[in-house]
Image (cartoon, rainbow, N blue to C red; front, side):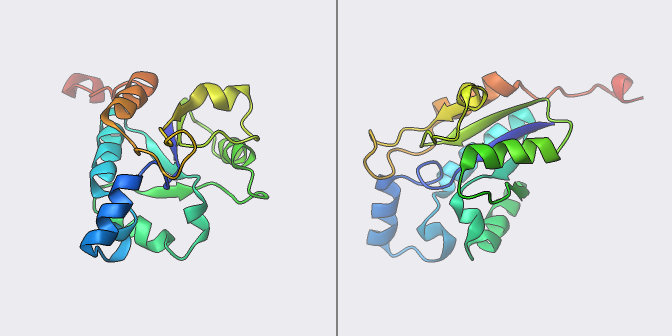
Length: 163
């Protein structure tokens, strides 16, 4: 199994998007999550066959069901990391320990946490955070290509291989 550990703020939204959403009066989850970024994530999932595990603090809010509903529309079903004293690196490692069969993973985040050790830092695809100011640019097509390159494309089995 391949896994994408996903942050929300700064990954599935951006400064530009939040400004636009407020200006245009977007409502619901689309007020905070850029559908174009979700579509980019969907491409990464489809190309790699990866499972998405939410490591964002959003997993602890009442928005979790709204996020699950939004992602389900794109065929993405979420798992979440456990909460361990708000230490994202430890939470990711605990999820990995509890879920055997992970062949590879990446972390999509705009922040480097103190709890990220050398292994997690090697797996991090650092999303632009505008040099530490606000949300930055969010997930890009280049970031998605990095995910695909690191995790590898889904191997499509031929009819003969399936038999």
